[in-house]
Image (cartoon, rainbow, N blue to C red; front, side, top):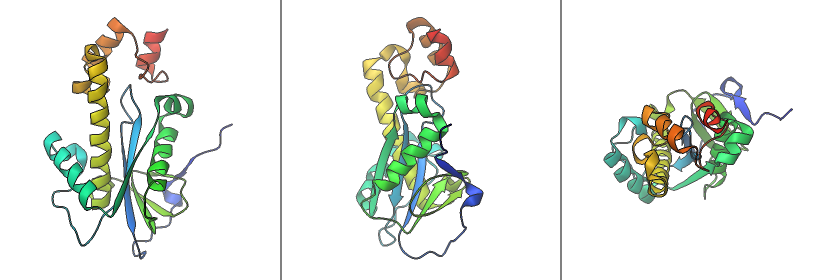
Length: 205
């Protein structure tokens, strides 16, 4: 039996006044049928604020792109990491998401005193961490992480579209839309599809 790679949020101590650097963490790409799941970690600079940070899903693509560049330029440090399609199929999507989050935190140039993670689960980390439901709309560092993760994955989908235009990845971004499901039926699965996800598994039978 595989050991668990995450902790439930209620196991995390709730400490809001920890001194030092605070990192926000979020992911993009848990639901799609194809591609990696992406996580980002961001430590913002209080002396160099960024206007307009919000949950990436509530921003236009153009606004996300602009904020992506601003976050990369102004944050004290940031890190983007992935868990591959193979890791998703081997571990399951939740475990793979936790793995990507852990990689993002470990990839930070500066070590945070505390990590704030969007959602209700925590990856195993060697620093204090807290899960915050809807954190991407409550905590600016998490909002910034959600933007980095979303833009990184959307760019990946654009690259995949160039290679497999018949699937329409530039539009659905890998999600199981009617057009994507129809393309799967007509063309089969690409090497980038998640074989453990039932719509893809049905095609591969």
